[in-house]
Image (cartoon, rainbow, N blue to C red; front, side, top):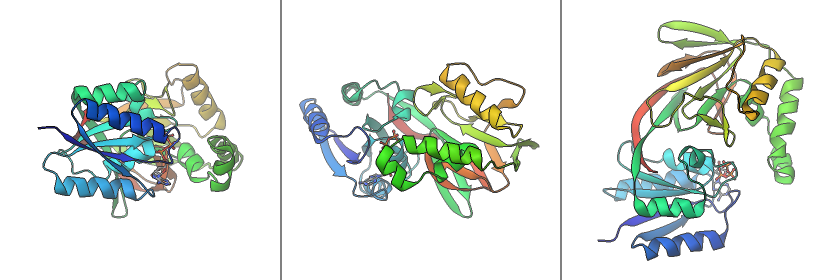
Length: 290
Ligand SMILES: Nc1ncnc2c1ncn2[C@@H]1O[C@H](COP(=O)(O)OP(=O)(O)OP(=O)(O)O)[C@@H](O)[C@H]1O
């Protein structure tokens, strides 16, 4: 029997086009799959569609078409441990697709047809009774504030340049407060942190070389001192392909963390909330097509 697959696709994501999705649908049909296209009308649709498919299908096969924001939406609608997830890189940075070594839309189609899977390990962030899953990272402090302070009007006009303007504003109105991370019975004090589930950050840049989306647990990168220069150097090292280094940088593995204070937090590139939060690693969340 031919296999049904549900394509949850964001038509507003960075590199989507109708021509591309039609090519994908034709290729999938040509290989005996039965694709059903579900275009999102807003950010709320991706988790809603995924939840509905999981409720109706015994073995849901869902393909998320878009950038990391859309894939995050789909992931947040899945029933843990039951679904198979494919990725069509229609976004701008497509960081998860890079982690999965998906080189292009055509490569993604070939992988979907082949159907090889691996177990994706993810993170769960909880704050004030709300829960959200993430697969790349949770950034607490500087990058959380940059994402929170992006102005929609600027984003509409200059796209990703709006993040640079927000970064400049965040550097100018510098937050000197510290935060505390409770991990494995000890407390680490720092100025900012990135809880990395995957190695890459913002594109093909490697922030946490030891992190792996297929291995349970996180690599936590902490910026100890509160100097702007430490963040600039971290960014420069990342762009130059050097691992994070220096006396103010600490990296350690963790599976469960409690983060105090009230700094801004971004997950998978979108603003989520302010601390305090609890972050836990979730094993075997979904079979992902590789
Ligand atoms: N129909 C829609 N209209 C507006 N926004 C949407 C719609 N569908 C999804 N979204 C939201 O748009 C945001 C950005 O989309 P997405 O991540 O797919 O693309 P991107 O930003 O171009 O890519 P990347 O995350 O790789 O940089 C997501 O957070 C998603 O929830």
